[in-house]
Amino acid sequence: MGPDKNLLERWRTTELLLLGGSAGSFKLLFQMVKLLPADLGKTVIIVIHRKRNFFSEIAKLFAENSHMSLREIEDKDVLEKNTIYIAPANYHTLIEKGGYFSLDVSEAVWYSKPSIDVTFESAADVYKERCMAILLSGANQDGADGMLKLRNSGAVTIAQHPDDAEMNEMPGAAINNGGAWYILHTDEIFKLLHTQ
Amino acid sequence: MSDTSIVITSTQITELIDLVRRVHGFDFAGYTKASLKRRVVRIMQLKKMEFYDLKHTLVNDQHFFQYFLEEITVNVTEMFRDPSFYKALNLQVMPYLSTYQHAKIWCAGCSTGEEVYSLAILLREAGLSKKSFIYGTDINTEVLREARKGIYSLRSIKSYAENYQFTGLKGSISDNFTILYDAASVHNELKQNTLFSVHNLVSDDVFNEFQLISCRNVFIYFETELQERILELFYKSLCPLGYLCLGSKETIRSDAFKRKFKVINHKENIYQKIGT
Image (tube, rainbow over all chains, first blue to last red; front, side):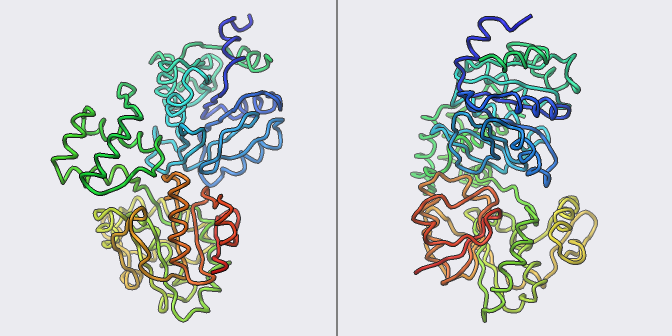
């Protein structure tokens, strides 16, 4: 079964794609980075939990396999189209009204820095219905509050189907709190991202 | 964790900034708004306050303002955060500092002092303890009091041990502390050449001339215009060929300042003042 019409329409018009993942999401994110075309016409932000002091390797690995231009976020970087941004380890990433990033070293959220909640919540403030978020596998609850805030602001929110997620707690939390508008199987997510 | 039910608007943030400036004389207008908003929401959650409560309390309760200031300005810090930075400083900057008769160092936005003591350890390892002096400044008197004490929880010191290992310095981080039960107190020899005092980067001016200024993970909270104003302050506060260290994700972007500073280490954002 393909993605529904409304979802496809929203995907076509969305300006910002947010991807959040933790344990068990690396492979999926890697495949997504490989899949997205150079001329996607959207901005992509990836927030993935990981141990600090190993951060630059992920960005490097992703960059080598991405058609889109890809970079790890630095303070006050401007959000550009056709670019994938990776949230740096040991910082929270926020989006400012002027269309640029700011970083923050404050307390970890759900033991995580970067926190998916922090980035998703600030995206909800700035992008509202102009963005789409996908929450993938993970073993904690980070991202669920952010998904709810996004959904309440008019954004499309998608949780990976818990049956497909290597660790189902994270997408499960977003389903339980009502933050997930759509619950999609992994192949459906890929089909959606593949749609021009 | 966040409470999705608290919603405040940008207009309310502006209102709050105005109020704090008028009543307490602190100007947060140049701070990045998304981060500021998050801090304000956090205070409202922790204190279970509505927006009007917050405003009312800010006007009428001086003690609350101290708390507000502490919460608004992020005081999360570690010793030897970004070990590769300290490694670079040791290799690329220490040899030059050793050529000065006296090395004055300014750690701007020092919070509870972890970075000041990290620098003090680095200077000692480079054999520069005797001729160096570190000034730690912050806008917040409460964190400075903690910094002066130099007492940290044993648990936090343990978490800095990994950072320390990555710096390539000899020995272990605990060599610098006297440990009693669950507290670790910085050795006096490291405290000797330090001074902690209040300085507000937004409103205060040059107070000395320095061979090195370290201001790491402070610019992330400032908008570009304010960053540039403070870069000017740092430029004026540095001796010719003095060094400026920013956080590992903070770069000098403006062309005017790119001409005034030479990049010493691109990845770690270590700069050197050039020209006059």
